[in-house]
Length: 150
Image: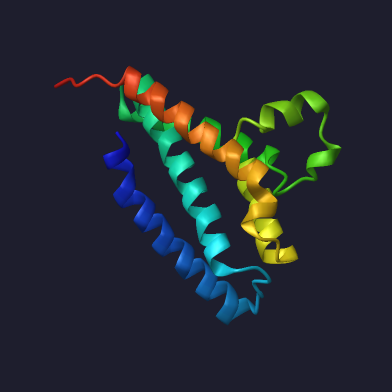
């Protein structure tokens, strides 16, 4: 299962590079932190999100169901991560739920590296949460995976 993820992580890292170049050249967005820290955070987030996709594919029977479930996880991720709305303004129960979503921790990490120039060591709590999500989701996806020819 991990072998299925690795090529897509590299594609995600290429996309990260394209976004960073566009942000820098077109919009003059400065990156205050170190690029290796930013890439480590991005790689962890990409792997965790891809693992969520693998988990979704083991739970669903058809591509359409997988698409619907992926959409139903993507929308709450965007809305509850603190990306669009202030995280501290959300009710505590919603904040607890949002802690399960990988994007919540990635938004904190990216804000730390890009805006504050924080080293990745200052963001180890968020990195650890992403790593735990990655390992748990990959383990569940691996246990649920069944080869079938239908």
